[in-house]
Length: 120
Image 1: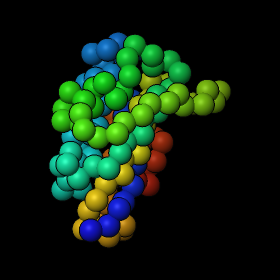
Image 2 (image 1 turned 135 degrees about the vertical axis):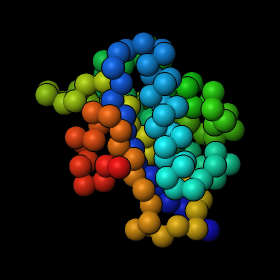
Image 3 (image 1 turned 90 degrees about the vertical axis):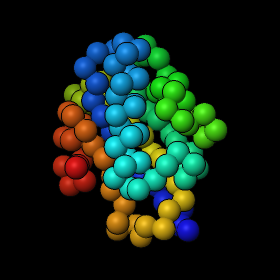
């Protein structure tokens, strides 16, 4: 097994608990599926959110879908003028047999613009 880091992001429509939770659920499920992982394979997850997203912690949403035993932390993304709003980013550390070049980094919805080279 190898330890790998997987990046991803999603843009949510509104600063609401429902939108933040739905975005986190969609993003984490897509990362797990694309990389043939389950929550048990995850070592830790770092979430950041743009400053306009403060209705809830992204980690709270992750706990709802099986990440209760995984160390999670949230932080605010730096407030860069002109940056894409409404974005939740993730760096997920996991145990996997995959080679680094076989890892799928997932960028969804408007966040595709952040990393067109990696977007699915």
